[in-house]
Every structure is written in C-alpha cells, then in structure tokens.
Length: 291
View 1 (cartoon, rainbow, N blue to C red):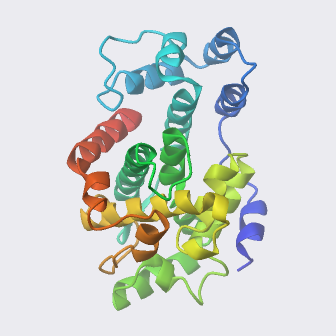
View 2: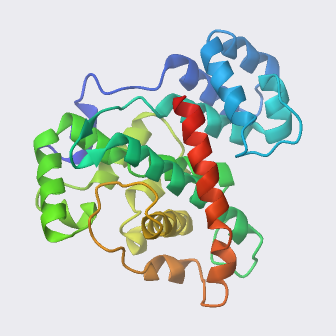
C-alpha cells in the first residue's frame, strides 16, 4: 500500500464535494460575498436548500422563530455556521456501506457526536480566560469533529484488505483503531483524513487537528488546542458509547488533552456538564441530514 498522501491523490474516483457545495463554501469564506451571490448558487439545488433549512430549524440551533430562507439563516447564524451546515449536508451520505464489524450508521452517529461535543467544548472554553485553548470558531470545531474519522471510511472503501486487517487486529486484541493500524497502514487513518480534507481545500484549522488528533504533542502549537478538543470529544463519545468507529479498547483517560487545555479536576466537570443534551442534538441533526 502507498503512503497516505499517495493513496488519496491516486484514487481517481474518490468522492469530491459536489460543485454547488464547493462554490458555496468558497463564497461563505469570502467576506466580500453578498447574500445575493449565495442565493444565486443555492437556487441551483433546491433539494440542498430544503435540507439546510430543515437543519437550521432543528432543535440543534434552537432558533425561536422559523427561518424560511438562506439569507435569513445567514443573518441569524452567520456565514461560518451556515458553512458548517452546508458541508455536513454534503458530506454525510457520500460514503455508505456496511460490514459486520464497521457500521456506517454507527460511524456517522459517532462522528456527529464528536462534532457536536467539539463545538460544545470550544464554546465552554472560550468563556474561560484561564483555559489553554486558543480561539477557534465553534463551527470550525464542529467540522473538524465531523471529519476527524473520515480517513477510516476512505481506507474501508479504497484499501479494504488493510482496513479489514486493522479491524480484525483491533477486535482480537481489544485495541483502538489507531493502535491496531500500526504495521498495517503506512501513516494512519488520521493522515488519510488530513490529505482528503486538504484535497477538499478546507482550512488548516480543520486539516492539522485531524492529522494530529492521536499525537497531540507533535501537533504545531497554534493548532494543538483544537487537536486536544477533538481528542477529548472522541473520548467522551466513546465513554458514553455514542456510536462506534472501529475502536475495541476501553478508552484511556485523555491526559494529554486535559493537560494541553489546562483543565483540572475542578474545571473539567464545568466544561463537560450538559453532554446529554448535546448527544440528543447530535441524534436529531443526523436524523435530519439522512432523512
């Protein structure tokens, strides 16, 4: 098997983001874009518009009055939040398959959980000036969490023999996917995910934490806190058995993430209080995306 970068770059039929989503994300990244520009692109895909409005009006965002247009959604939620909704609507369902040991339904439940909890933790830490967390937009954290495990799906579909070997090793040895992939996959699922989101031209605030989510102290300092948030969110989802993502070990305490985020026994409960509501929101979000 080639290295992670070559694997991603040489897959001719690797799903790309739909053109309308790519264009929308570019517009939503550009402060010079107007709502008219965005509406013009949205008008080309009414099914996408309907899905986005369904998500905007879900309990996840808790908007008190009904939103009936994309321009209204942008005015209320802002460009970054609408961008994360557009990306979620486009990505979930692009990859779909199932085998006995790796359920895509469970994978997306887990991914939405990690996304939602990453966003939640960032919002909590942003209110704490003593935390070690650099400022990252909550919806950037959401996207990083959503796509943190996407490399596993790429491996399943385009390097299936190696993927199955990792799953078998993890299951037999009660290991995490990350532990089991060593010696089987050059690089890691995280590096495969990194090269994919890089190919999709997502920001470095998403790319780099995905790459280093299991190697926090190797992560560049400017992205380390987001990688730590991603790691902590993964741990909390596994602890609560929220979806499955190819891990068969008991999740070890996230000591590195806690250290990087400058959390203590006193502050950690405050950061994680209210997780049950966030898991409920994640379930609702997934149901609407796939419904």
